[in-house]
Length: 234
Ligand SMILES: N[C@@H](CCC(=O)N[C@@H](CS)C(=O)NCC(=O)O)C(=O)O
Image (cartoon, rainbow, N blue to C red; front, top):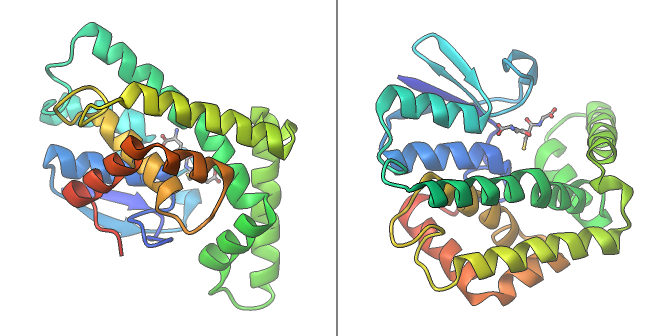
């Protein structure tokens, strides 16, 4: 049995971490049985980040590498029929979501004042004093350093929003009037897209990036469709 180690649900989504939500979505879409283990214990994760899985004693970390492992072990019902061009498109879109847009969203949640208040309440609101003050301060300092290291955090807020909006506009154009990102059949790319888009469109944080995504009727409808098919929204 696969045990999925991920953060507890937040923001009324299966997970406030798009990487955790992506992996759970993939497991559901591929029809693989799993059980959830909600945790905050990053020090137990093989790479110090969530999600990771324990598959009957085999630990695998990183959502993308986990999906590769699952495909090798259980087969590839979602992506098996993709051609070379579609696989390349999936890779490029995944990189855009995970290595670029993610950082703009992270900035809005952890650095922008309104986002930080929401994040602080959701993630640390149940801690007792003085941990309720100390832990979020340390965590936010860590995220600020990561944003700086990535480079996104060195831009102004306006520039970060413009970069995120350009990503969202490009993704809307790529989706076009297709049902799924690579055509009429769901693929693992849709686990990525739905997890990241839900974490923008379905989270109660009003940002210019969310407004830009909402202006694209195809992105909003896609997100609703994926939610109806694959994940519960509380
Ligand atoms: N490349 C990793 C990224 C995972 C990731 O960044 N997880 C974040 C949550 S969204 C995390 O665990 N952060 C905790 C930390 O970095 O201390 C994957 O695809 O699983």
